[in-house]
Length: 297
Length: 291
Image (cartoon, rainbow over all chains, first blue to last red; front, side, top):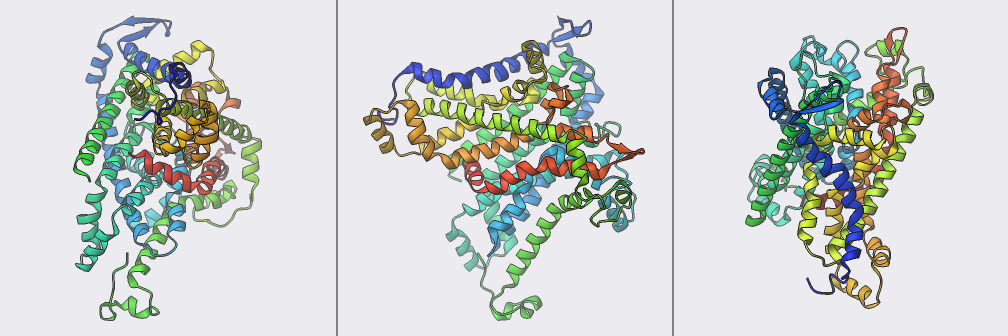
């Protein structure tokens, strides 16, 4: 960069400008982040008054706990369902938003509003509307399918209900990015394909989706992080992890181990596992976005 | 974007339509209206049910406006603490927005307009905090707050959120896109860094500041797990956790679902209004975030 684009020389001023950000990041992010690793090697005894070093014992406990295994498996399955469901519905709506001739900005706001929907609000509303005995949606679903729904006692049904609420809340975010990606596709490409008489579905699969792939990868990563980290209110308000552990996501188990059972060492080890998950996802995103940059996609 | 459909290729639907209206667009509009209706349906039902009393709620298929009118809203606000929770949530979110925008503007100013050693390392140091969402550091953070004596305080629910990798990144990107000639002029006039920020950069970054503010406000308003843990004094709690307390509201042994729906609508309104009013800068800002 030339001298003019970095006009200020004082290293002290730069330091002072960065200082508030640094204080917050070090005190509330890096320090507790590192402490998590240290705590994961300890156990609290005497009602939390003393910590003893136990090496990898907490990790061994997690690795051999069938409850943790099932929580892990459920979380992975949950993330897969939420990611696929969110992407599929969002892609459908986004494609319609891209194709519509008039009123697109009004439609857009009406489609992206769930971005502002707080997770706890989504949980409260659908807990009632899908309530096994009082929910109006449950009532009509039962009439329609001729089955009886009771997700308060049926595990797979509870899993499905929580996933549906998670997807509903995440649609707005995904539609925002997909519509932007579709609008970035050069019009000449669309036009030439149309002259060749390529059908709509074919266009979507052969032209649009490949051109949107950097955005889609980004959304897969963000939606997966969302499914692992931001779904606590859904489980807390709707199922408390039940029935019999069917919705006991890692984030909910972490909360209970730490703040209900006071197993701080074990909970810290669970935090480290979550850290590994977010680190892997960010790495994948970084590598893939680099490769797109290289191939000019 | 529409394909040319000749008269011969028109479907039955197409032939019924007035000249110039394309079948394809009818399907697109129909699909959109249906999707939007389904996405909004739970909210519409919640709105209607929020006016019903317990008896009406228990008549499952009753979707008429109930006899409670707006009184469930009054009850939630006055008797179930939602007035207080809303104030707490607004204060928390506003502090986080103002704090995060200010701190991030300062940091971006240093990163873009200063030359200092290890610039890249400093930027990476900030970006790497993306790997540390709250659940990754929740136990030690709770510990730290206890040691600082910050339990039950506004400091505890705002402090950890007022610096952010995302906001610094966005402002940095934006500053780098500002033409060098402008910076040059300011420099030749001998304008100091804070005046430069205030008089040149901020007026040129209004859209970006608005966008970051919306993202931050919606994010802050949505906080649930951390306030639940760190705030035990119910009068200092935020509105999202207030919804948890409301689940226990009952009348002669029956859960007051109408009241809960009113609470949910109240807790949704501020971020929804912010999104609708400021959707333009929000969309522009998010378009940059992905990079």
